[in-house]
Each structure stands twice: as C-alpha cells, then as structure tokens.
Image (cartoon, rainbow, N blue to C red; front, top):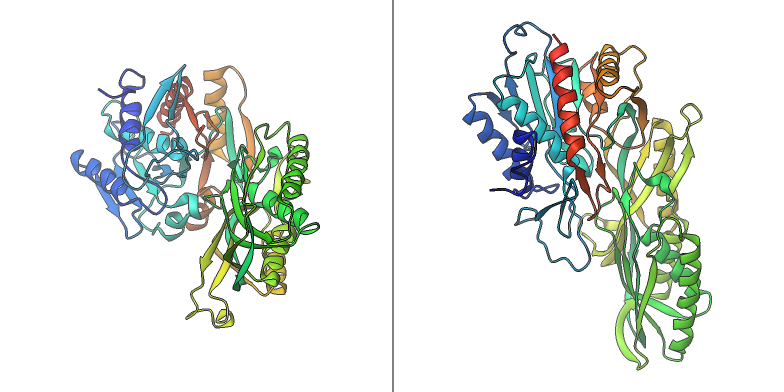
Length: 497
C-alpha cells in the first residue's frame, strides 16, 4: 500500500505516487515515457512516442461529446533534481522517498517533482476513467522542459487537432496564467591556464541560501551563491594575493544556486588569521543584507597555515574569472511598464564549474586546457531585450578572452485579448470558489508559447494546484489544493462541449 493510497482523488494520487517511483530527471526520461506508453497500451488508447521521448495519447470524446472540439491536456515528464548537501540520493537510479505530513506531500532530502508530475497524474486519471464527461482528448507529455523546453520545441504537432489547451504547469491555485516570458540558456566559457604555486590553502563555501525558481522567484531578492562567491573573491583580492585552484556552485541554470565552493591558494607570506577575520566581516555584511530573504546565509572557511605546492590558475586567469563573476549581469534587468509587478527581463547564473575544454572544436582555446563555465537562464517577455542581454553577455565574455553561446531558445507566449477559454475558466472558478481568479502573466518559461507557435489560433491557459518551494528540496504539494483543482478541471472539461 502506497503512502498516498488513502488520499482523494484516489486515481490522481495513485498515478502521482507511481510517477515519483520512476527516475525522471531532465535528460533521463525514457523510463517515464515508456510508462506512459504502457499506460496507453493497457487502456487501448492510440499513442505516439518520438525520439525525444515525447508522448501523445488520444482518447475519443465521451458519449454526447464525440463531435466536440478536441482539447489538449499538457504537462512535462521531467523534473528538476535538487537535493540537500548531505543527501546521498541518486536521481538516476531511484524513485523518490515520499512523505506526507499535515496535508502536504514532499520528498525526503530532495525535490518532489510536483512540477510537473501532478499534471501527468491528472491527465492519466482522466484518460483512465470511463465516467468523466469530456471532449476528444489529446494528452501531450513533453520532455526536458526544465532544461530549455527541448521536447516541446522538437515535437511534431501536425497530428494534433486541438486548438484548446489546458497546460497544468503552474504552482499557485487561483491564478490563471495567460502569458509568459520567452527565454534561452546562455553558456559562458572563460579559458584558464594553470601553474604550480606554493602557498597556503583555503576552502571557502557560500552556503545556507534559500534558492528557488529562477523565473518565478527571481523577484524575491534572494542571494545567488555564485554571484556572492565572485563578490567574496574580489573583496579578498583587494587585500591578499591568491590564485584560484577550483570553483563550482549550483546544479541547474534555472534554479537560483544555494551553495558555491572555491579552493584558493594564498601566497606563503599570508597571515591566514587575517583571511579568517576578513571573511567573518563579509559574513556579517551578507547576513545583514539578506536577513529578510536568506536568513541562513553564511561563509564557511577552512584554512591550512602550512604552505604546500598546488596546481592553480595563473594570476591573469584568476583575475579574469573574478572579473566575470563580478561584472556579468545577474538578476532582474527590467520590470514591465504595462503589467504591474511583472519582471520583464532577467537572468540567473545557476551553475558554475571548472571543466576541461574540448580543444578539438575550440581552436581559439588551444592553449587553455581548462575553462570556467558559467550557465545562465535568460528570460524576457520582449524578444529584442532577450537578444540585447545575450549580446551584452557575449561582449563582456569576449573582452575577457572567452566565449558565449545561446541555446534552447524559446518564444514568449503573448497575451490574447479575446480568449473564450479564459472566460469559461473564470466563470467556473467563480462558481466553485466564490471569488474571481487572478489573471496573470508569469516571468517563467511555459511550453504554451511553443505550442501557440505550432498550432495557429490556440487558446490556452496555464493553471495548477499549490506547490511550494519548487526546484528546492523543500518542495511540497498541497493535498486539498490538488483535490480542488481536480474538481475544477473536470467541470471545465464538462462545459467544453
């Protein structure tokens, strides 16, 4: 018997628990895709699976709805795999360790993947049922949404007849999303040379940050551990001589990083107690600046007073990496003048790492066997601002002797003034909840924009139950909200006759 077996709606939570038992991080979606195919075969439903592991499942309309316009139920199969620092969990091999407490579902030490596992669970429960009134259905399950909407960009939409789409990929009940930002992933590489240096070693961690979704929560003012590491190293460089040995932080470009580490080698004459004192003062500064957003923020340092020999970056390479960390833009770049409170353009330095260069393909870097790689998630509701920001990053990267490349580009989903679906969903919401829903644009990428581009005339709304702290190990799914959203979805389908 599963942990969620006594919850209602039974079918939704049964499928959600099954989904959680299958490893399905971005880039690891074959098993979850095959599970959906097996479901379709078991229930005698027409299906299609492509080379990207996208799955489409068709179901005829229920009695009386056979000739109604087709409706798409859409969600993505992959999840963001984040975990606590001391958690040894292997997302590639194992299902999640679910826990249920006080009406909320979470996973022990890891993300839950409610984004977007609950959407798939809703769709499978509807497809399974023989007594839910509904139009002809096209359940479209895409892959690698969390790493650039790769599946949605690649899917062949020509077999789809739907021009009405329910995207169940939002995390706040009572909000109907009608527009979203476009975005792209930007990769900056700063080549570095190494040499043997004699000096005193210090391990420095920036940790205890809250993190979060790089789009939805970029406006919360939370600290970015990668950016703070740059600030820390630059502050140290004004007083001490050192070389970076290694540096890394964050796991995904679309998650605000919570922890960054660097090992630096100070000159042999350095007084390490002074280094400790300097970092303690910085710790006080950060704690004060981020007391409201990141109460647990701290600098942790471990030093060796005895000199040794280490392989570290050249002085110039160290300076370039620090300059990139300090100077490359991060966070909110512009707020919307048309929609109050909406972030219009932003970017997030989500992942930082030292990697080996592919020297066969990067002839300009042949003299540099290593580079420091910066992975950004860039978002904007205005395509020209997105392009300008990418150009700004590229310009600075090239000035530092590096490169910048853009990939996973996806379009914004523009607000539709005339939307019968939005009107219907507003009407049903008012009847069920006794209040008006909030019609909102979101500063995050949704697959709606890609499908709107592939299916002319598409009328689409994104919505979903309450999911807190997505993309972090504190992620939780509200059981009662899942139930209310299920009832809301069934009533919408019933009226789309």
